[in-house]
Image (cartoon, rainbow, N blue to C red; front, side, top):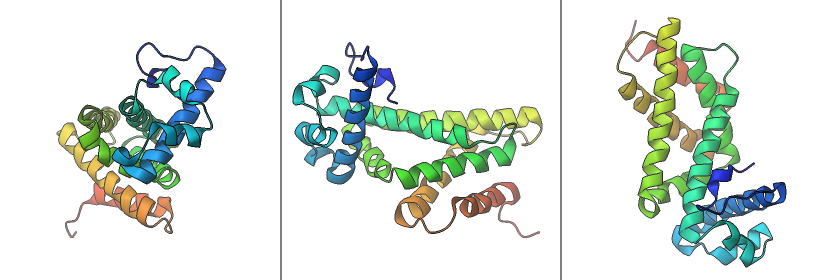
Length: 203
């Protein structure tokens, strides 16, 4: 379901039906922006895809810009949820990063439009674009810090490590989630985990 904070300020749905409508609008916006891009997308296109009246759109959002901002934040939150849900109970260190990557790759394959939407946010909504990546890196850094505490990861500069891991994951999702989804996500995640754990130096 949509987060109630996804609506424009002061337009939070108060009923289950309202939350369902908001979710339909966000899903329709993902399809509209994903297919047509920010500049070509339209409010009427979103409401047509959602099967809602134009008035319903303005019940929850002030403009096309507002729903785009809400969509970027919603998709960012859903990525975080998918990654967290894929982590095995009690997993730490490399296993935790492997599981989180599996969750992300599954999400990328099911929501390929996320790449175009996030890329366009760099120009259409720079604040949300930066928040998406900073939030993701912060979650990875926190996982790494917990791994250090658990003794499964050696201590180090977690922020730099987090951005490096995130960059790897983003491009793995593009290559093996959006462009080609024939290989299993488990296989891709194992290779990435080996890289993180063993590095590239010959033994």
